[in-house]
Length: 368
Image (cartoon, rainbow, N blue to C red; front, side, top):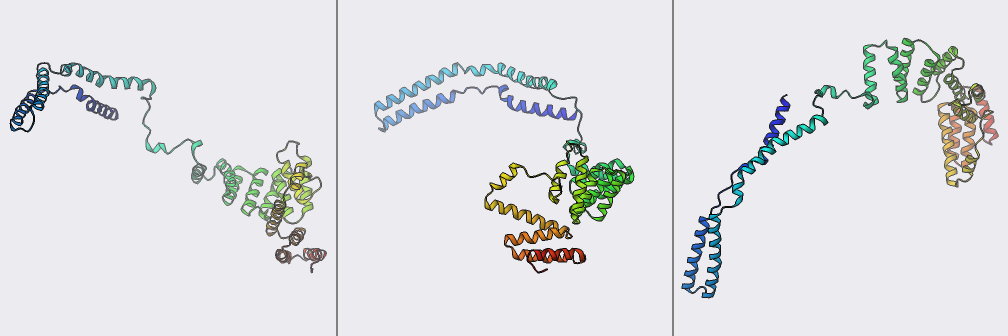
């Protein structure tokens, strides 16, 4: 109510400031002083003529002009301006405008505005709708809720995948473990936990991650995610044939429209397993049409990816031999020697792999 009163007072003040001049009485039109000025000018003309400052013709012309002005002033004194007689009309316009403008504003606001809408306190303005809030804000709310009620399994199951998608894998691992604790064990939750552990390790399927995938398989032998990552673990350990066998078995059971079929086919192509899809005609044509520079860049990118993978999993003897051979073909002999040294260090504790590496190097013409 106070706000309405303040607005009304401001409107009235603004209206008065604009309309006040319309209500004022016009100033009387004073012509007496003007006539006296003209008489003084006539006397001055006579003095100038007597002194010889002006000629008689000039004096006559000046008298005629001043006489004309004197007559006009006398007429104005008898008939004052019509504007002074309109004071009642102007006051009426001022009153109508003063009252009519607020009435018109209210008449427009009532049907179009929201006068019945209550106040919106400042504290509530920070509570934006969930769709408009940021992910960080939503996460903070869920985490605050779980601090008060850490046994809420549904909260942990909501929080864990969001943390994993944001790359906060260590927190996701904790959330998945709590989800299993308070929601119960399942193949899906075990596989999600294993994936989070692998994500925290930079994509490497560690022993802890592999154990979770094996627990998922024990609960459901057809668990897709767990089987895929067990194949990935075999690939990273250098057991490409075993990885290919796992992925081929998954493809054999997969429905034709399974969304993860392309992923398995790409994985099989990576390890050279039978049943891997051949490159399309378009891909072959595009590679053939590449310029020498583009083709070299593509090859170097593939070699660098191989080198990165071997740094994560150094037990792949065939991979090391392919890397050394690639550097030799590219003419990077320093990198070839560096890869050879890294390969020997990676398999130094495995006599069989060291022997395979040395035999392969001999076949490449290098000292085993």
